[in-house]
Length: 307
Length: 251
Image 1 (cartoon, rainbow over the protein chains, first blue to last red):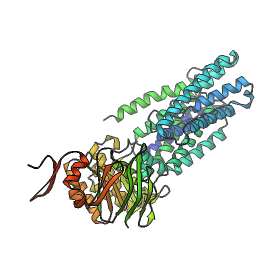
Image 2 (cartoon, rainbow over the protein chains, first blue to last red; image 1 turned 90 degrees about the horizontal axis):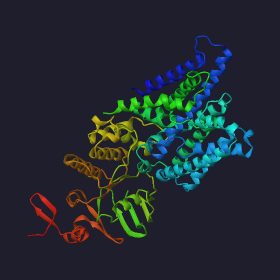
Image 3 (cartoon, helix red, strand yellow; image 1 turned 30 degrees about the vertical axis):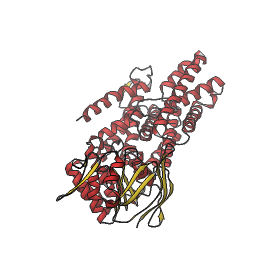
């Protein structure tokens, strides 16, 4: 499929997802929706789109930085740091600062620790290894912390850890970060394209490798930190959306990056709509639904790409 | 524009591979870089390309050679790195990056060079194929086409005939000869003395422990020296078809 056509279809899919999110809810699908209710649903859909876009964009950049198909936005422990930040705020009695702020602070600590552990070299294998080890450390801290959290706060916290789209997320901040991240990465699309040949070959062609890798690391980690502070740890999107789009033929970054934002955003809007409506009045964890929607789609794509 | 190497030193794990190398490579010259496995051939090429630190100084046309100066100097890696979702045509077009940079798109001249490089290496039919779907020899041709599109003044080549079949070895030899005739400086790490004899005007022998010997091919690559270098009796037979290196003792 031609990349321009595919991008158009992804944009239409995102619009369709917004339409569905506006019309469908706990009472099922309705053509006519109360404007106040529609506004509330659209606000949540916007949060979902922004978070999905941030995750897919961060995943695309992280896979390029780490040269590893299993890389995803949280592979270096950004979500572990964010979760530990939220938990620490609860335990220290400073939860009033708000989850977004404490999660972002925790994510920044995680980003700084991985950076310090690599002595600023950011070589893919060492970076991945140190990130995975630190993520395991965050997991251990989280397990210890969860045992200490008062019971009444536990369900809300667990739901956040699984990933949740909240009513009061700061969409303006999220959208600003998404637009800035997409703009910055698009500005460097030729340099990112060159990295597909390998780090050494890219350096031989004159790419300032250290600077580009630093840029990629802080951009991908910053996008992931913003996503996790807005909606907790929503997995799967950042891993699978970039792979799926590459299998569909979006390989150049000037097409892949906007495609990832559209596809990741649309997928999370659909998952958020499903989480509200499928088992109403219960609300399902949105992170589980992203996987349920994405796994069959990805397996179909992978099968289709086999010779 | 000649390539001058002054007091070049390259080491690995504290052991010297090349010490105090002084060499001047003139335009149109093709230099063979010979030595045993692990002698430091690739390390020397990587150092000149800015991938490894080295002692001494290198300059091209009087200007110091900087790492990443990809308009003036290109290196064909011994083996390509694993590629990520990139087609043959995109990979060859990457050779024009040093001339366009991160901010400008390729122009008509760039595209013509890329098309010519694809054609020269017989890659037109494979142009949309992802690199990781290619055979070793096809990947080698893509690397050569990239270097041809890059069009540097100095070509560093690390065992350029790796993976190529007979036809493409002959085509690559012809391509390299043409580049030397066009005034490029060629510096090739290789093991095939017959290829070196046909292609190279000069040779640099890395003899171990940092020692080296350099000069015109016929003066430097003698039976005695080649046999000592490879710790194997090597014979150069001369007949009506030209000369022929092979292992064994003269009857």
